[in-house]
Image 1 (tube, protein in one colour):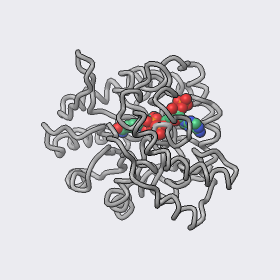
Image 2 (cartoon, rainbow, N blue to C red):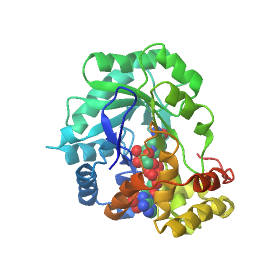
Image 3 (cartoon, rainbow, N blue to C red):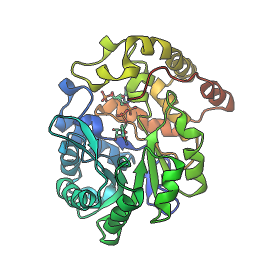
Length: 316
Ligand SMILES: NC(=O)c1ccc[n+]([C@@H]2O[C@H](COP(=O)([O-])OP(=O)(O)OC[C@H]3O[C@@H](n4cnc5c(N)ncnc54)[C@H](OP(=O)(O)O)[C@@H]3O)[C@@H](O)[C@H]2O)c1
């Protein structure tokens, strides 16, 4: 696995990370198996996919517990990233909470579930519109000072929000959606991160699986899968967006690699600071996605992919 650093001064990480969310949440509930997921995390560490991404809200809580179990005895091999700032209320609705007291309690609870005395990257999952970002970020910085966290990152933010946070404490990373069906971050946030030594972690880098060519209709999605209610996975949007996957597949066929590797290689080509975190609970996908770090796209292939049309359908 090729390596890079997580931000200008951060630890060394493989150029492809691992998103753990789908191991216990949101996608494909009928086909999850904790033992297989733990094996996927172990294999990831074996092959240099050492950046592991989770959150307290995934499950909620079960994802951190699973990652904690997987890391027992192997904690030092991982660059462990988790998040705070979202929660599920009593009606099952996801809400934001960026209050300092929530963040202070959140890190202690995350460390307990993860079975560790520190995380390498603690990310503010969303900015809470009710709380000035400076206050949330100040509480995140306290966790650094207390030695509970090595560095702090943001998620789904604008350049203005990054600058406001930077005035309080350095921003190590920004995690926002970026893929061939969501290129909005490329205009301002990704270049700003490059100029300021901030790692950019594209979430949902495979378009929640769409770019792999697996999902042509909402009926192709597993039962009780969160994506069944997502606007971009409705049949009309899927049909309109097929042109994007077709372009990925055409290049994949010419290069004789799976489509996911092309989608990930395009992301890696956006800069050394761009570290995609594809999500999988499937051993063969993990191996295949890791190999994407060695796929170099030609300028012509990159231009072909840069030119895909904007996706139809809201992302949430
Ligand atoms: N900060 C945020 O707000 C936010 C939001 C969403 C996600 N995330 C993070 O980003 C990570 C990745 O995003 P994501 O899981 O939403 O989407 P993704 O990585 O774009 O796609 C995951 C889907 O693609 C499938 N897949 C993975 N590799 C494949 C391959 N080589 N061939 C075919 N199918 C493949 C997975 O299948 P299987 O599950 O069957 O293996 C899963 O259904 C998450 O795990 C989470 O850590 C963060």
